[in-house]
Length: 585
Ligand code: ASP
Image 1: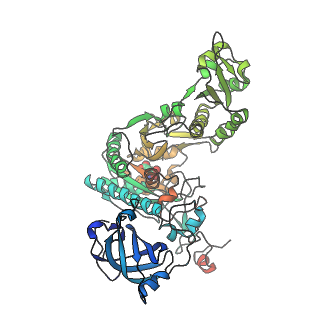
Image 2: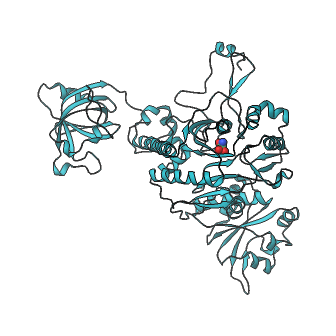
Image 3: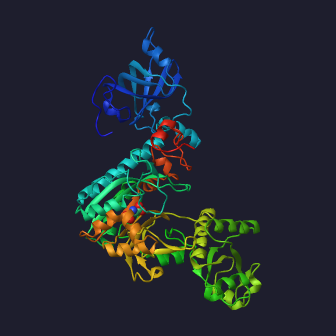
């Protein structure tokens, strides 16, 4: 801890901060009983406060109340003790503990609160069931792994605030009760009691407000912003999450990217995350998709994809040929020299299906005179030239997907990552890069309309008359295959904004109704501007080496959006519902 606490009847020192230089002094410390051991007539207590652990020793003295009180202590009781700091005997030093060279010989002990038997022990041994941890979060938060994660989170946010402060950014809050922002997810709605039938939406991001701040002349804004998206939860998402939201005026891509590189280099340093110094690589979306089947490539291992449509066109294999005839592609992933059993190979189908594909075809390359041949159920459909053109070394496993090009690439991209895990491919070090030059829209076949890949306030490049060919001024920051954040240069002209909304099926009337406040502001002198948002939960989880973002959020929800601690979401009183002009189900 940076400073000693103000002395009061509970404590005058942090327990975990005591070192041999304090030997001979009398201290008062307070905290929780972490462990109690009775030993040769002595009682040893490990006292825990936020600064760490400290060993207390209580010597028996006839008729001594302190000893009697110590005997009654149980784990997690809350105590304040006064005693003398003494050096431990040489053999008793505990090198594992920062305070391991000393202990406190207690002469006065006050029990401040008793604790029931905790639902689990407050140490980090043993695999605890997450539901139990979340239900008893106050106790779970006492564990060192939780404390270090939340300390790191604080350090990260503090570094962000310092860095952006040095660059003249203002931290400005934006509303939580607001109107829908189209980030592409479902809104959380809040009924308005004063005018039943009208609703607030919780912000999916502060996107429109930060643009208004630019139009308002603030030029450099940031916020550690809470965002809400009512999505069907995927494994490691929270409906409510925190992002660093940034916006700047009179900027282009390089300005935002350089700023964030400086900032993130500092954040990575805080987390002891060893990345190459910036500038970081920039890869186009097209290249990322073609080589890695993903817009967030993990480049720490090979297994790159290749489009072999040209090589395999005209084969006897109907499945490939009909895909090629209808404008699709055949893509191959060379998995290297691996032996997979027939059932393991069949199991790969399920993996690609999870990533949007249909099936994988497989072939083992064999050296066969004069050119390579395949050991594969589909080998007979291909000529020696075709097999040679696909390439590969003897013993290597080739995995093929045939589909619409993007679908085939993404399916194998998903398989690529899972295979790397399964094969235990080394993924040492860390890899950071920008993915740039995204398309503006993707075709939503179900709804028969264009959907923005980022959001509809992103500035397009190219002609608005050809939406499918439009690029966007969008950039994503990716580390180790995880998207840490993304942003864009924005549209700052009302007519262009109107046109883009029109392309995604929001006509002028609806645009005016939903985003009139933005369109009006854009008509009053909007500077060119752009920004980014970075996911704080994900970044901290990555730096802390935690698999789940729930481990770096003090009070998270489960994957199904429930809060086992408070029991939310929960029914409310009938009366409350009526007041809102609603009817309970
Ligand atoms: N509002 C965007 C998001 O939340 C980020 C941005 O474009 O700045 O993803």
